[in-house]
Length: 270
Figure 1 (tube, rainbow, N blue to C red):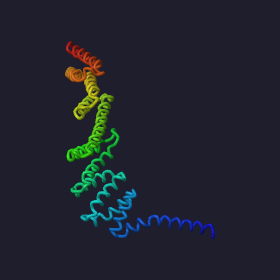
Figure 2 (tube, rainbow, N blue to C red):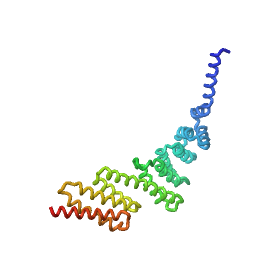
Figure 3 (cartoon, rainbow, N blue to C red):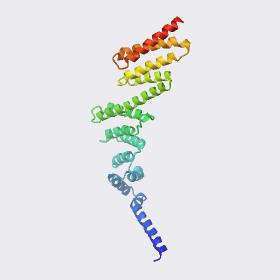
Figure 4 (cartoon, rainbow, N blue to C red):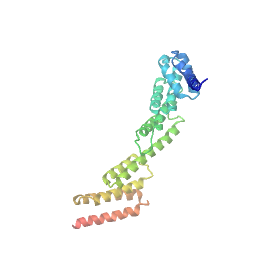
């Protein structure tokens, strides 16, 4: 056999081998036999081949809708999306399962997974936190609906983690405004942070940064606005002193109060 014929034979053999690898899946997929496709889907699912299982389930959903097998089919179908990282669709299908099969033993699990799929999409705290907020809302709703569920502790733990992520983002936003000398925006951001996270461990630091921002804002204001804004700084100092008189920031806070009083005295003399 010549060299060219050998190469040709190898190519043909490779094509046949590749074709045979696809034969079983392709034959079943195109068989138009719902029972065969459904059994194959379950086989792929049990072996962890979730993408092939998903393809098969998708083909037979119309046929099994309303039948006995539908519950297992839709349950597995939701998990194929979760296990392949398609979390938006996973959340949708888990929630859809809970609404459709409201008497199912898997209803509670699927409601939890619908919320948890949003947790999986929660990004680094520097990025948009829409999915974190959605996850918190849905996990809280789950805990309210199933107060005796063993999953409530997990819900509370996750909510705390997500809220810390939101808190960190809020703090860094205020700090960024402060570093950019955008003091009014910094004050607003830090005030909102304290309002949204009243139990934050950074409360003393945040209120001190509000005081500093207010002082710098007053100091750099046009002359006609300084008296009003220095008085606001004194108000902020009193708030800080009332809540954090023993904090590590108190001495610097008192120095700001002293400088503010001197500035007001100078304005009064003028």
